[in-house]
Figure 1: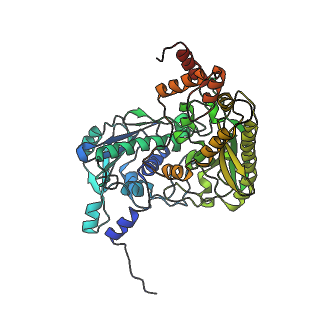
Figure 2 (figure 1 turned 90 degrees about the vertical axis):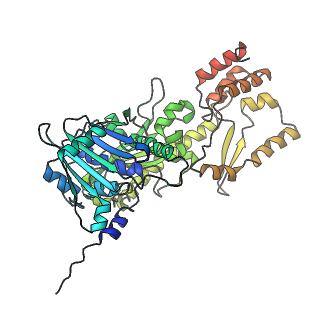
Figure 3 (figure 1 turned 135 degrees about the vertical axis):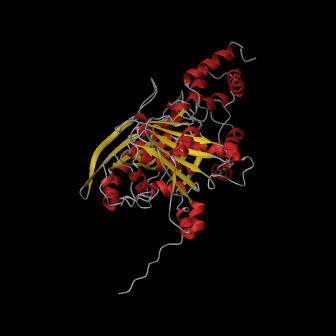
Length: 492
């Protein structure tokens, strides 16, 4: 049978390759996978605005590459996804370095050496040149050029690899009023993303510890399961730790029940969930060889709900079971194997029941309230959620009296509940540019405390009510000190 060669045209193929769907932070994370696979103990991100010509570089002190190894690394699909890899290898398709880089820039330079005494060797993909000449070829960088680039990006390791992105056309936003501010904001987002995606590497949790920094600022690890609390703060409860079998592979599954957010400081909440948001952080956390692939959401095993927000499940699989998970090129999406789903349902239901019962228990607690003024009420018959003011809350009883409400007082409370602007809140929460929250102005809080004290409310009730409400973000001790200042007249 006759055959004809049909090599892809460089321009259209590159355009498709650049549009796989990486974000800046996921692209940087994909390149960092290679650094970790190379045994790096330190990885530094260099990001410079460059007066409108920004540059980004990922620098590591890993084992580096010989010229031949670098050529293989720069080849599209240089290593088959079915090739045998070491257990610490975070690669998958042999495409990550190229696709992640091309998604953000048009000039990809990689400079490396595997011994301090050898010469630096560099190769560059210049996508404009590839498109123009329709030739799949890389440029060889002379050593003096390599050294110049390494000096410009402050590369200080004796050996290792530097991945350098220039002509960052996909990072820039032409619609932004202040392009530099936009760029710097995205770099901050990269740092936060690395702190979550590689939190086990940065903290050395069951994997080799790796130091990471962004522009010389250390990446702080997130703690999504709340297992490393600050001194005297409550830790999460490990509810289960088991090995589940899928085909010939073992999957480790651990379930955690987080402490109630009212018991945690603002900074501790932020280390567990982005912006301290327990609700969106609930769900499965899936790791491949210690690297976070999927975080949050229950993958249709159970519904996301306020009552389940204390529940989190850690799922670990090795890189030799990739075919079970339908792992994508970006390593940002997986599909749970069908046989694992059935086994996970039991684990998920158990931890969610514990979370649910925690809220039920707290809702029944009397007096000196360790719960907020607002109650969440679920009507099972109507499948409807409403928010009510707790009539038994000590502050409400203190202000309106312990006896039955007058008709006017009852009507006022009902009016406040029924006029809660749910649709406006939903719209604001869906906006990326608006932060929904409460005032953190201590002067305003002092005025509120002063008014409550003047109304005859016991200071212990005030302290417990404010400290138990995560909206305020103040500890019991901090509120007691503030009350002391108010009572001594320091606020006036």
